[in-house]
Length: 257
Image (cartoon, rainbow, N blue to C red; front, side, top):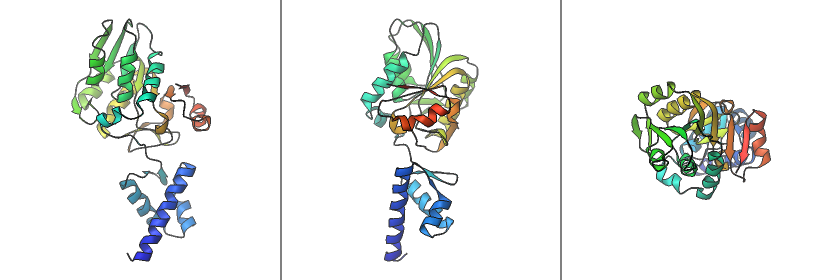
C-alpha cells in the first residue's frame, strides 16, 4: 500500500469512528456508498478497527465497544464512586426472605457490601469475592456455585456452574454486564461466562442489570440475549433521558442512582 493510499485509508477510518461516535452505529452499506469503496474494503476497515479495540463489529456494521476491561483488578478502580451509588440502589431491591443471585463482578461485589447486616435472605453466587464479602452477614445463607475459575473475572464457570443454576428458582438476579444496547442486547467478554450468566437469568423472576452509564449503547463479543430479558436497569445519573428512552420503550424499569 503506497503512502497516499495509506493516508486515504487512515482518513476514512477516522471518519468512520467520528460517525460512530456521533450516531451510535454505522452500517457497512451506507459507508460503502458514502466513501465510494467496496463493501469488502469497509469490512476490512471495520475488522482492523475492531482488532484495535475501537469498535465492536456486528452483522451489517458496527457499534461502540464497551470500555470494560476483562481484568477484575483493573475494573475495581474504574468508576468507583458511581459503582457505590449503584450498589446502594441495588441493595434496596432486596427484601427479607428472598433468594438472590449475585453475579460475579466489581459492581455486584459492591452490592454485596451494601446489603444490610440484619438482612435475612439466601444469596447464591459464583464469585469467591462476593461470598467473602458476605462472611460477616450472619443472617444471610451464602451458597457458592463451583466450577472452573475464570481468573480475569474471579468467577466460577463451566458446565458444573451452569447445571447448578438450572436447578434454582430465585427471586432476583443481580447481573453484571460489559455492554448493553437496545439492538445488540446484553453482551459480555467471555464465552464460558456468558453461558453461566444466561443460566442465572433464566432461573430468576426479576433480572436486574447494574451498569454504569458508559456501558450503555455499547457492545462486546458474546451475547446473553435481548434487552427484554431484563426486568430492571440500575444506572448512574450521568445517563441522559435520550439514552434511556429506548430501554424504557422495551419495557425496562429504570433506576438512576
